[in-house]
Length: 87
Image (cartoon, rainbow, N blue to C red; front, top):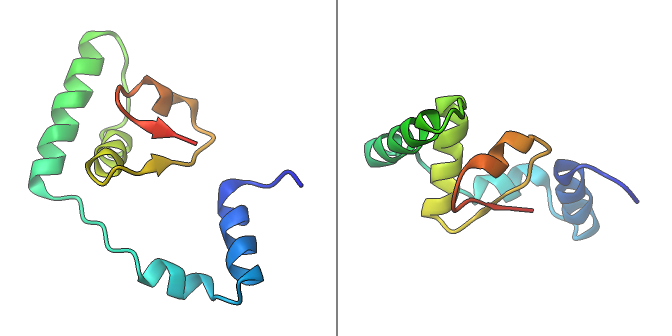
């Protein structure tokens, strides 16, 4: 079966008898001031290399890296962020 990551999560939770809203209610991640600063530094570093990414995407990446998480996305520009794990 070829499904998108979000659909895979929904299918897995459904098979386990869990509601998707309860799954996401258990997750609490916040983008702090320190993470925004880190994201800004990463974005600036990338921009100096000629890579222009949205600050919000870099902030998502910084949040994932801070919590040792992977990003599940079809957006290829996340590959340009050093240190980010993708699935």
